[in-house]
Length: 137
Image (cartoon, rainbow, N blue to C red; front, side):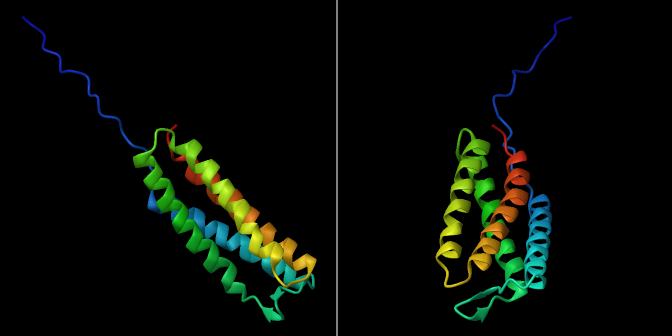
């Protein structure tokens, strides 16, 4: 009796963040950043830019929007680059730092600017590790 073995597959499986996991993470980040903004408002931090109040819902909206961009970025990097986790983390940390610029330059109090930067850091701290964990390296 002769044994027949199939050749080993040379295909590699691309590991990408799922939409479900990514969106759940985005919702969590949106809630946490909104809570931080509400706490700041309760602590009398004027969450205003150029004397115009930042709507509380705006924090969640921006986190959700940019988290979806992050999910798309992670999924595309998983398909197109050799080390998607590393590339994703480097790119998103750099983009997070760049996102501080408008907040730091805003016509607002120092406390307001600090809270705005803090919300960026919190959103990134929630979203980036979760999406990166789903990428292979």
